[in-house]
Image 1 (tube, rainbow, N blue to C red):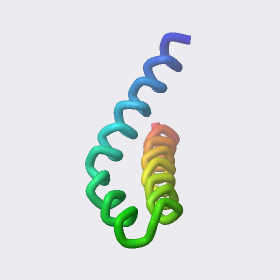
Image 2 (image 1 turned 90 degrees about the horizontal axis):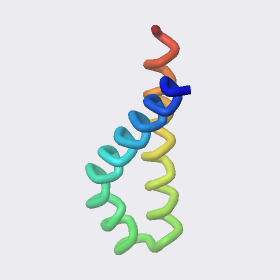
Image 3 (image 1 turned 135 degrees about the vertical axis):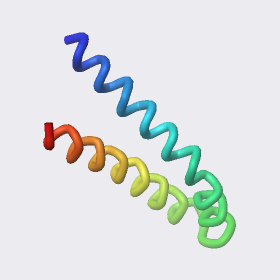
Image 4 (image 1 turned 45 degrees about the vertical axis):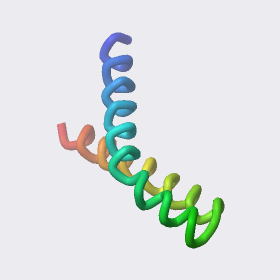
Length: 60
């Protein structure tokens, strides 16, 4: 159980880092294309980081 909590905390940290790196892009999407496009972009970023972590985990 502690191992799972550690994994969740790592995933959360990874997602937070990814989101902070891409907030500028989300702001641009929001200003140019509206809320829907900005939300879509942010969702893609989050799922991208989840997939990367999942792929990395499956290698071990």
